[in-house]
Image (cartoon, rainbow, N blue to C red; front, side, top):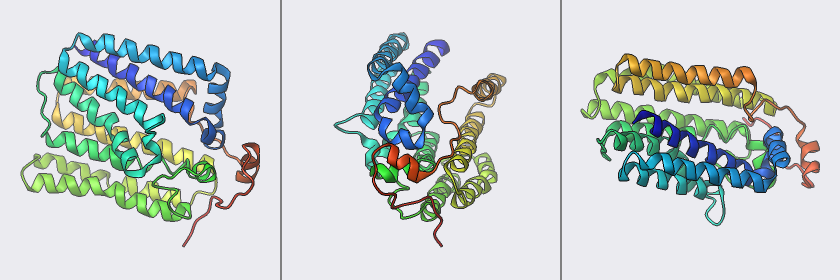
Length: 297
């Protein structure tokens, strides 16, 4: 049961990233030139063909886990396509984009429950981790702020005139899951043990403070990487609270072994890349740089 579920989830995730890399070629020429160059080397057509192969393979894996899991997998595929590709391209719309982004965790959680035969749409942990992912979706927009502004993409960051203003709003949003968590505990929806999550509150505050002081894209990307580790820590910690077992500990350990290997082998396309906004703007045909990477008071 576990292997087909992991395989289906990994394949949908991989396909989603391929589609996103293909659809974001223009802004990635500024934000993530390494990822953009990979797409150019592979060819857009080959990237899309590979993503289709992954989607089909994911569905074949999902079939063995029943109708509920397969249905959730189909919904996850639709969500990943709607997030990146026209005509919906939800990522260009702030609220729909965050809702779609949160599906990366929410739908995976539902898939796990479906595979275990315990599907529960009212599970408070489901709503906690899904909302956490929605809030975290604002963090990933910070390192992409310069390029997104230059190509005119509206995100939770680019609606503000500077990275400083954007980080203040992001900090407020990042803290909100802890308010929901506290409310769930005091209303009896979650055990008091979940209040241990509050020990992590200083981390998002620190992330936002560092982002507001960043002077280049490499600094922002470095902070984004730390933010990703923070997000996985939150999700894995709550997983362990829900499933306190050695098998769960081994599962979490395998996640961090995998992340360490990715970092060691340097195969992550989101690498730190420092550049002059003016020079890069000219390289993609943008005439003026009206919004430099700056901090407002």
